[in-house]
Image (cartoon, rainbow, N blue to C red; front, top):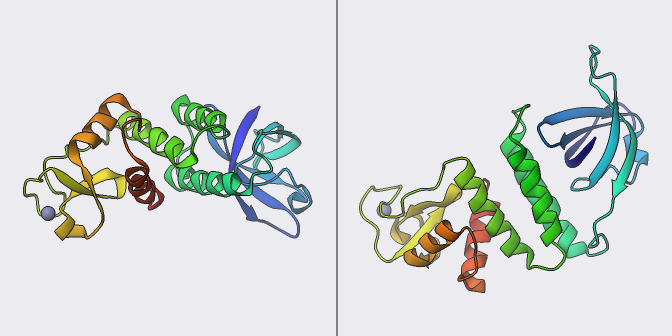
Length: 205
Ligand SMILES: [Zn+2]
């Protein structure tokens, strides 16, 4: 099997419990002496075998093998990648069966991670996620006061639109946002706008 490590927590002694996302599942696995395995790190893509899948204990990870990213030595890229994995973990951790969409989206992001600006990759991926989950909001009405919005809108978590007076966060041109929602790409957004969207996403999916 192949999966991304979304989270790792301590178990008994040097053992660890890792949460992995595979093409159709989010699952926790036990790893004996996990603390000694450098491969067991949030964000890594690994190949593995599972032992004890049908038993009454937590299934165990065996024969872990790292599938290396080309950007494995770039600390900045790794750090933002791990933040992104944390967001996916928080978003999906209470589910077990999931659509292949999520794994595919993470895989696609990892492939763009080396060459593209990582904030843009996140902004592009997030709109795909909102569309998949049917959570894209209409930008004409403020989420806080329910009054109409003008040409510029501020965004809350989940891209909920609001007046700057209602939430006091930076504004973006509404037409540009609508275009981004429509073409599912950040192509026409400048770096400042990307930064605003990135900060919004980092508050949580
Ligand atoms: Zn308002």
